[in-house]
Length: 116
Image 1 (cartoon, helix red, strand yellow):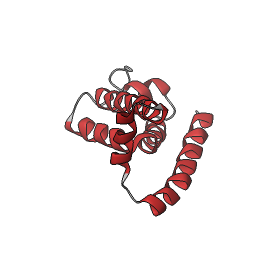
Image 2: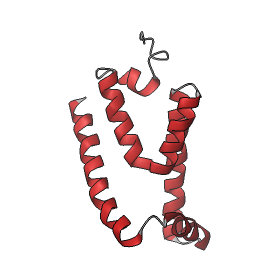
Image 3: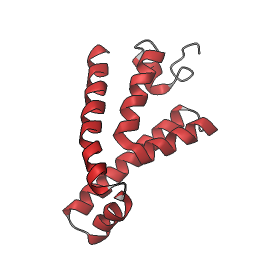
Image 4: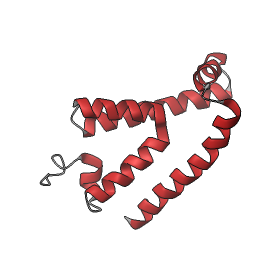
């Protein structure tokens, strides 16, 4: 679990280091570019559409893990809009909350058969 936690931290740090200057240069005007690339039917759009499917899968897993509760739906929205920044932070948090139990981290305590 230590290796995974180190990976999550490294991914968070590098993502923030990359994102900060992009926001400084281009502001938060992402959606028109993102969906414009998809509409153009080129390789950048294909990459963005592929990435969108991963965002949807991440959001779906997040809400499923939280039993489609209101909190789970809120977390799913964060997963959809904040992508890897949310998911790595959430998995890091869960890894500590469940003391390294990978089944409870990925499935939730109830589905993993663990006490809450």
